[in-house]
Image (cartoon, rainbow, N blue to C red; front, side, top):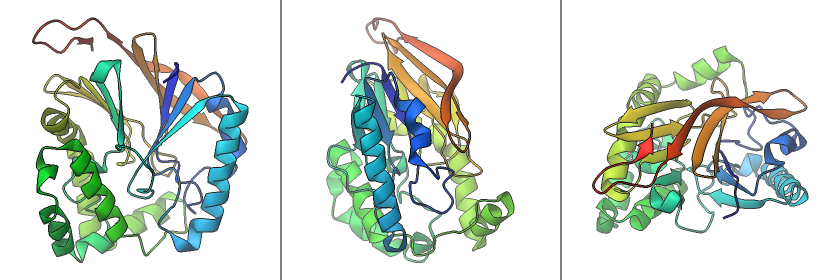
Length: 278
């Protein structure tokens, strides 16, 4: 994988609530990158009413990447589970893991109306994959199957804060599940690494639409946010043994990489310890 490796997530191309209206605005985010990783929910694969526009924008994104001469890696998310591959990538010899984030939760996206009304089907999917308790490949397969079994039936129309809040609050338990997931994502990320990627010192996720950086039980959990309001989007870049993150400065016609907010150096590991300089 060519460096620098740049990571973004949750573009939601084609969604009515995505802030990305023109794919060409993303060009500056790709320029100068060796590899660009789109960490899930890049497009609306499971939404028939949005599919044509979403696929068109995805094709435009591929063209943009080709023009920027960068390699592209698409990782699956709960809105686009059909991408091939393991469902994650590893950097720094496995000390950094990048995955969308739905695998952190037993039911992927517990705030979805479709899951709230049919939890028994989630349990049936898990029962068919007993190895998913310890095998990361099986765990990601479970996440894919949950996503495909529960496609979103209601797609919001408005991007204003009131409209987004109203959508999240109906039914009320939907908002409660969202808040719980936001609150626990760092702890869930640390537990996920302990179970499936014990070498991992840093986990990069999206999915929760809440950017942040947290240190939990000796591991750094980084969320790159989203291009859907009210979330804010961030970039992550891996280059020459350093992992950095910063905000994306968005405008209707162009998106720019803002200055680095945090940088972590990955020193040679010491026996029996996590060695990243947090």
